[in-house]
Length: 128
Image 1 (cartoon, rainbow, N blue to C red):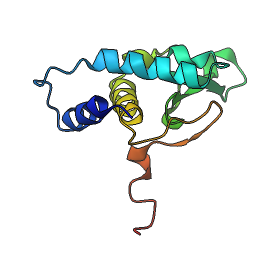
Image 2: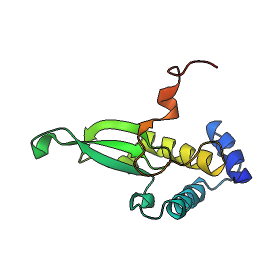
Image 3: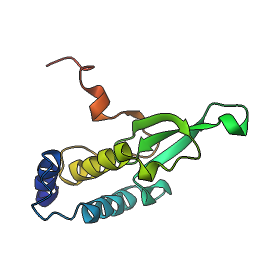
């Protein structure tokens, strides 16, 4: 667990950009950590991975975009011509997820894991 990443996560959630955290460096560290933990995967070089879905014609092909760190589905069935790295939802989720994983708030999941993001789970799980 990286205590500084946990503090940076809290600051990031509150929108505090004035505290001097280098979020890009934290994301790079999270990718390096993921790569070290799961060395057999090629997807660790990016904060997201895609899978083609649907469409029998190349013009109708779509892709799902998943978070590398938590395996959550961020964007379903977007056009394959889109660049997920330029989409605000992808950047926002993967930055927060990288910080949460480094800070020990969320576990990094192994390759092949698929699920919902925390944002999509809200309201689906029973209160305990």
